[in-house]
Image 1 (cartoon, rainbow, N blue to C red):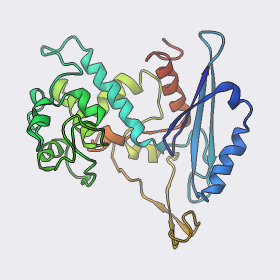
Image 2 (image 1 turned 90 degrees about the vertical axis):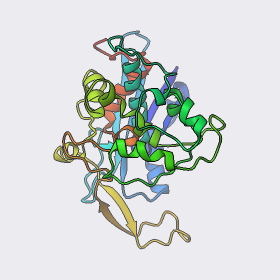
Image 3 (image 1 turned 135 degrees about the vertical axis):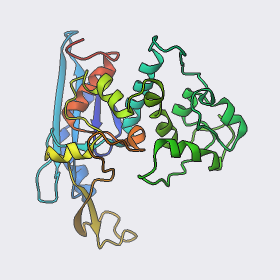
Image 4 (image 1 turned 120 degrees about the horizontal axis):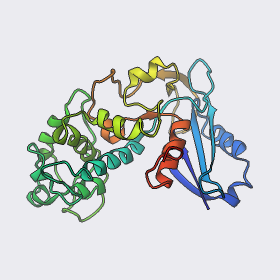
Length: 295
Protein backbone atom coordinates (compact mmCIF):
# COMPACT_ATOMS: atom_id res chain seq x y z
CA UNK A 1 0.00 0.00 0.00
CA UNK A 2 1.30 3.46 -0.86
CA UNK A 3 1.47 6.18 1.74
CA UNK A 4 1.40 9.63 0.11
CA UNK A 5 3.00 12.56 1.90
CA UNK A 6 2.78 16.21 0.92
CA UNK A 7 5.22 18.71 2.42
CA UNK A 8 3.55 22.06 1.84
CA UNK A 9 6.48 24.43 2.11
CA UNK A 10 8.72 22.43 -0.21
CA UNK A 11 5.86 21.10 -2.34
CA UNK A 12 7.20 17.72 -3.49
CA UNK A 13 4.83 14.77 -3.48
CA UNK A 14 6.67 11.78 -2.02
CA UNK A 15 5.52 8.16 -2.01
CA UNK A 16 6.95 5.50 0.27
CA UNK A 17 6.04 2.00 1.35
CA UNK A 18 3.85 2.02 4.47
CA UNK A 19 5.74 -0.84 6.10
CA UNK A 20 9.03 1.03 5.71
CA UNK A 21 7.49 4.28 6.89
CA UNK A 22 6.35 2.63 10.12
CA UNK A 23 9.99 1.92 10.97
CA UNK A 24 11.02 5.54 10.64
CA UNK A 25 10.75 8.10 13.37
CA UNK A 26 9.09 10.73 11.20
CA UNK A 27 9.32 13.51 13.78
CA UNK A 28 13.05 12.98 14.25
CA UNK A 29 13.67 12.79 10.50
CA UNK A 30 11.82 16.03 9.80
CA UNK A 31 13.46 17.87 12.68
CA UNK A 32 16.82 16.69 11.36
CA UNK A 33 16.01 18.21 7.96
CA UNK A 34 15.17 21.54 9.59
CA UNK A 35 18.44 21.45 11.52
CA UNK A 36 20.53 20.44 8.50
CA UNK A 37 19.20 23.37 6.49
CA UNK A 38 19.37 25.78 9.44
CA UNK A 39 15.94 26.92 8.34
CA UNK A 40 14.28 29.69 10.34
CA UNK A 41 10.88 28.59 9.03
CA UNK A 42 8.72 25.49 8.99
CA UNK A 43 6.22 23.46 7.00
CA UNK A 44 3.13 21.29 7.24
CA UNK A 45 2.91 17.56 6.57
CA UNK A 46 -0.11 15.47 5.61
CA UNK A 47 -0.07 11.67 5.50
CA UNK A 48 -3.10 9.74 4.26
CA UNK A 49 -3.65 6.03 3.83
CA UNK A 50 -6.65 3.92 2.93
CA UNK A 51 -7.36 1.56 5.80
CA UNK A 52 -8.24 -2.10 5.46
CA UNK A 53 -11.88 -1.03 5.71
CA UNK A 54 -12.71 0.21 2.22
CA UNK A 55 -14.54 3.32 3.41
CA UNK A 56 -12.09 4.34 6.15
CA UNK A 57 -8.98 6.50 5.98
CA UNK A 58 -6.00 6.93 8.25
CA UNK A 59 -5.06 10.62 8.24
CA UNK A 60 -2.27 12.38 10.11
CA UNK A 61 -1.41 16.08 9.84
CA UNK A 62 1.16 18.11 11.70
CA UNK A 63 3.22 21.28 11.54
CA UNK A 64 6.96 21.50 12.11
CA UNK A 65 9.29 24.39 12.80
CA UNK A 66 8.36 28.05 13.02
CA UNK A 67 5.54 29.77 11.14
CA UNK A 68 6.23 33.41 11.99
CA UNK A 69 9.20 35.58 12.82
CA UNK A 70 7.81 36.13 16.32
CA UNK A 71 8.42 32.45 17.06
CA UNK A 72 4.89 31.14 16.53
CA UNK A 73 5.15 27.42 15.86
CA UNK A 74 3.86 25.90 12.63
CA UNK A 75 0.80 23.69 13.12
CA UNK A 76 -1.45 21.62 10.91
CA UNK A 77 -3.57 24.77 10.46
CA UNK A 78 -0.70 27.00 9.33
CA UNK A 79 -1.23 28.32 5.81
CA UNK A 80 1.54 28.08 3.22
CA UNK A 81 1.76 28.85 -0.48
CA UNK A 82 1.72 25.46 -2.22
CA UNK A 83 3.49 26.79 -5.31
CA UNK A 84 3.24 24.75 -8.48
CA UNK A 85 1.07 22.09 -6.85
CA UNK A 86 -1.57 24.66 -7.83
CA UNK A 87 -1.14 23.44 -11.40
CA UNK A 88 -2.89 20.18 -10.61
CA UNK A 89 -5.94 22.14 -9.46
CA UNK A 90 -5.79 24.01 -12.77
CA UNK A 91 -5.57 20.73 -14.70
CA UNK A 92 -8.60 19.35 -12.87
CA UNK A 93 -10.53 22.58 -13.44
CA UNK A 94 -9.79 22.31 -17.16
CA UNK A 95 -10.96 18.71 -17.13
CA UNK A 96 -14.27 19.83 -15.63
CA UNK A 97 -14.71 22.30 -18.48
CA UNK A 98 -13.91 19.58 -21.00
CA UNK A 99 -16.51 17.27 -19.45
CA UNK A 100 -19.20 19.98 -19.51
CA UNK A 101 -21.70 18.84 -22.13
CA UNK A 102 -23.71 22.07 -22.04
CA UNK A 103 -21.25 24.03 -24.21
CA UNK A 104 -22.43 24.71 -27.74
CA UNK A 105 -18.83 24.23 -28.85
CA UNK A 106 -17.32 21.28 -27.00
CA UNK A 107 -13.63 21.25 -26.14
CA UNK A 108 -11.27 18.33 -25.58
CA UNK A 109 -7.69 17.76 -24.50
CA UNK A 110 -6.80 17.97 -28.20
CA UNK A 111 -8.60 21.26 -28.87
CA UNK A 112 -6.20 23.67 -30.58
CA UNK A 113 -5.58 26.88 -28.67
CA UNK A 114 -5.73 28.92 -31.88
CA UNK A 115 -9.37 27.91 -32.31
CA UNK A 116 -10.27 28.98 -28.80
CA UNK A 117 -8.24 32.01 -27.67
CA UNK A 118 -8.30 35.11 -29.93
CA UNK A 119 -5.15 36.60 -28.34
CA UNK A 120 -3.10 33.43 -28.89
CA UNK A 121 0.03 33.28 -31.01
CA UNK A 122 3.60 31.98 -30.80
CA UNK A 123 6.75 32.90 -32.71
CA UNK A 124 6.96 29.37 -34.12
CA UNK A 125 4.13 29.17 -36.70
CA UNK A 126 3.78 25.40 -36.30
CA UNK A 127 3.46 25.61 -32.52
CA UNK A 128 1.11 28.56 -32.90
CA UNK A 129 -1.22 26.64 -35.21
CA UNK A 130 -1.01 23.17 -33.68
CA UNK A 131 -0.66 23.61 -29.89
CA UNK A 132 -3.44 21.89 -27.95
CA UNK A 133 -4.63 22.00 -24.35
CA UNK A 134 -2.60 18.85 -23.78
CA UNK A 135 0.53 20.57 -25.13
CA UNK A 136 0.02 23.46 -22.70
CA UNK A 137 -0.17 21.12 -19.72
CA UNK A 138 2.73 18.98 -20.93
CA UNK A 139 5.21 21.87 -21.33
CA UNK A 140 6.05 20.92 -24.91
CA UNK A 141 5.38 24.06 -26.99
CA UNK A 142 9.09 24.73 -27.54
CA UNK A 143 9.15 27.73 -25.20
CA UNK A 144 11.62 27.73 -22.30
CA UNK A 145 10.71 29.24 -18.94
CA UNK A 146 10.84 32.97 -19.87
CA UNK A 147 10.04 33.65 -16.23
CA UNK A 148 10.11 37.45 -16.01
CA UNK A 149 6.60 38.80 -15.55
CA UNK A 150 4.90 41.76 -13.89
CA UNK A 151 2.23 41.05 -11.30
CA UNK A 152 0.31 44.04 -12.66
CA UNK A 153 -0.14 42.33 -16.04
CA UNK A 154 -3.47 40.79 -17.00
CA UNK A 155 -3.86 37.27 -18.33
CA UNK A 156 -4.95 38.66 -21.70
CA UNK A 157 -1.80 40.81 -21.90
CA UNK A 158 0.42 37.85 -21.09
CA UNK A 159 -1.20 35.79 -23.85
CA UNK A 160 -0.82 38.61 -26.40
CA UNK A 161 2.91 38.86 -25.68
CA UNK A 162 3.68 35.15 -25.99
CA UNK A 163 4.27 35.64 -29.73
CA UNK A 164 7.37 37.71 -28.93
CA UNK A 165 9.07 35.03 -26.81
CA UNK A 166 11.76 33.08 -28.61
CA UNK A 167 11.49 29.28 -28.56
CA UNK A 168 14.55 27.20 -27.69
CA UNK A 169 13.30 23.92 -29.17
CA UNK A 170 10.99 22.70 -31.89
CA UNK A 171 7.33 22.08 -31.17
CA UNK A 172 6.86 18.85 -29.14
CA UNK A 173 10.60 18.15 -29.31
CA UNK A 174 11.36 18.28 -25.59
CA UNK A 175 9.78 19.05 -22.21
CA UNK A 176 10.48 22.61 -21.02
CA UNK A 177 8.84 24.02 -17.91
CA UNK A 178 6.75 27.10 -18.65
CA UNK A 179 4.38 28.85 -16.23
CA UNK A 180 2.84 31.02 -18.95
CA UNK A 181 0.90 28.09 -20.39
CA UNK A 182 -0.89 27.56 -17.09
CA UNK A 183 -1.60 31.28 -17.00
CA UNK A 184 -3.21 30.80 -20.40
CA UNK A 185 -5.26 27.85 -19.13
CA UNK A 186 -6.60 30.04 -16.32
CA UNK A 187 -8.20 32.13 -19.10
CA UNK A 188 -10.63 29.32 -19.99
CA UNK A 189 -13.28 29.83 -17.27
CA UNK A 190 -13.88 33.52 -18.12
CA UNK A 191 -13.70 32.70 -21.81
CA UNK A 192 -16.07 29.71 -21.74
CA UNK A 193 -18.40 30.21 -18.77
CA UNK A 194 -18.00 33.89 -17.91
CA UNK A 195 -16.59 33.49 -14.39
CA UNK A 196 -13.12 34.12 -13.03
CA UNK A 197 -10.67 31.26 -12.83
CA UNK A 198 -10.44 31.47 -9.04
CA UNK A 199 -14.25 31.44 -8.62
CA UNK A 200 -14.57 28.45 -10.94
CA UNK A 201 -11.91 26.52 -9.01
CA UNK A 202 -13.43 27.47 -5.68
CA UNK A 203 -17.01 26.61 -6.65
CA UNK A 204 -16.29 23.30 -8.36
CA UNK A 205 -13.23 21.91 -6.53
CA UNK A 206 -12.28 23.64 -3.28
CA UNK A 207 -15.72 24.09 -1.68
CA UNK A 208 -17.17 20.71 -2.77
CA UNK A 209 -14.16 19.05 -1.11
CA UNK A 210 -14.72 21.09 2.08
CA UNK A 211 -11.24 22.59 1.84
CA UNK A 212 -12.42 25.68 3.68
CA UNK A 213 -8.99 27.07 4.56
CA UNK A 214 -7.71 26.94 0.99
CA UNK A 215 -7.77 30.17 -1.00
CA UNK A 216 -6.16 32.11 -3.83
CA UNK A 217 -6.44 35.37 -1.89
CA UNK A 218 -3.58 36.34 0.42
CA UNK A 219 -5.80 38.98 2.04
CA UNK A 220 -8.15 36.27 3.30
CA UNK A 221 -5.25 34.12 4.50
CA UNK A 222 -3.65 37.04 6.33
CA UNK A 223 -6.93 37.95 8.05
CA UNK A 224 -7.11 34.42 9.44
CA UNK A 225 -3.85 35.04 11.31
CA UNK A 226 -2.56 31.65 10.14
CA UNK A 227 -0.50 32.60 7.07
CA UNK A 228 3.16 31.74 7.57
CA UNK A 229 5.77 34.44 7.11
CA UNK A 230 8.18 34.23 4.24
CA UNK A 231 11.65 34.40 5.79
CA UNK A 232 14.89 35.80 4.42
CA UNK A 233 18.39 35.32 5.80
CA UNK A 234 20.51 38.47 5.47
CA UNK A 235 24.23 38.80 6.06
CA UNK A 236 25.13 35.31 4.84
CA UNK A 237 27.95 34.65 2.39
CA UNK A 238 26.34 31.68 0.66
CA UNK A 239 29.49 30.86 -1.30
CA UNK A 240 31.09 30.05 2.06
CA UNK A 241 28.09 28.85 4.05
CA UNK A 242 25.07 27.97 1.93
CA UNK A 243 22.86 27.35 4.95
CA UNK A 244 24.16 30.08 7.25
CA UNK A 245 21.58 31.50 9.65
CA UNK A 246 22.47 35.18 9.33
CA UNK A 247 19.87 37.77 10.32
CA UNK A 248 16.34 36.55 9.74
CA UNK A 249 13.66 38.94 8.54
CA UNK A 250 10.08 38.44 7.41
CA UNK A 251 9.10 39.05 3.79
CA UNK A 252 5.72 40.24 2.55
CA UNK A 253 3.65 37.56 0.85
CA UNK A 254 5.02 37.05 -2.66
CA UNK A 255 1.67 37.16 -4.48
CA UNK A 256 -0.54 39.78 -2.79
CA UNK A 257 -4.19 39.52 -3.77
CA UNK A 258 -7.23 41.17 -2.26
CA UNK A 259 -10.52 39.32 -2.03
CA UNK A 260 -12.07 38.71 -5.47
CA UNK A 261 -9.13 40.30 -7.29
CA UNK A 262 -7.47 38.02 -9.83
CA UNK A 263 -3.77 37.59 -10.49
CA UNK A 264 -1.82 36.29 -13.48
CA UNK A 265 -0.04 33.70 -11.31
CA UNK A 266 -3.14 32.09 -9.81
CA UNK A 267 -3.29 29.26 -12.35
CA UNK A 268 0.43 28.48 -12.27
CA UNK A 269 1.11 28.75 -8.55
CA UNK A 270 -1.35 30.84 -6.56
CA UNK A 271 -3.02 28.55 -4.03
CA UNK A 272 -2.60 28.88 -0.26
CA UNK A 273 -3.50 25.91 1.93
CA UNK A 274 -2.69 23.94 5.07
CA UNK A 275 -1.93 20.35 5.99
CA UNK A 276 -5.53 19.49 6.89
CA UNK A 277 -6.90 20.64 3.54
CA UNK A 278 -4.05 19.00 1.64
CA UNK A 279 -4.93 15.72 3.35
CA UNK A 280 -8.44 16.02 1.87
CA UNK A 281 -6.93 16.81 -1.54
CA UNK A 282 -4.70 13.73 -1.42
CA UNK A 283 -7.65 11.58 -0.38
CA UNK A 284 -9.71 12.90 -3.29
CA UNK A 285 -6.91 12.13 -5.74
CA UNK A 286 -6.58 8.59 -4.40
CA UNK A 287 -10.38 8.26 -4.39
CA UNK A 288 -10.75 8.94 -8.14
CA UNK A 289 -11.79 12.54 -7.59
CA UNK A 290 -14.50 11.85 -5.03
CA UNK A 291 -14.88 13.42 -1.60
CA UNK A 292 -13.30 10.97 0.88
CA UNK A 293 -16.35 11.08 3.16
CA UNK A 294 -19.32 12.55 1.29
CA UNK A 295 -18.82 10.65 -1.95
